[in-house]
Image (cartoon, rainbow, N blue to C red; front, side):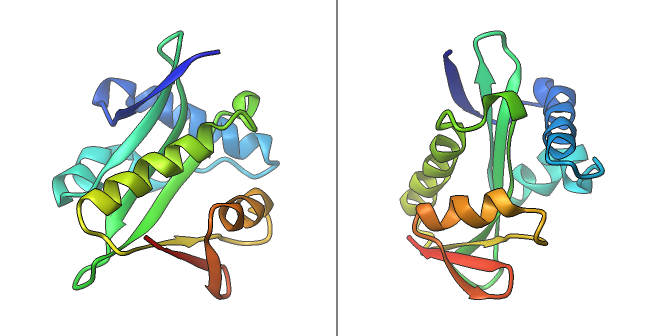
Length: 145
């Protein structure tokens, strides 16, 4: 199965939102929408930050990730790394994360932070350490870029 990573495109908005809600449901969580995803343009792109989508061979969203710069620093917070439930453990999350990290290094960012959420985010708690992120506060991880 093939897929590509692309910068956010508004034409995929509804499909991305559906994918995120489906991903949360598959984890046994009550699917509720993150408000920032309703307007990625305003909450990420217009601020000078970025958001990416993983698009499959059928032109459907199968993953996403974004970041927001931390004002007054050269660091960022990663947000909304979600992978379609049926496509997990195929390297999509790793590829999205590497895409972001490469971009961040290219623009001079020095560190990426991620908030893990509660214990229900068990997948995040095992995923990020595999990629060099270390916990520095409860539910907070960071990687020097």
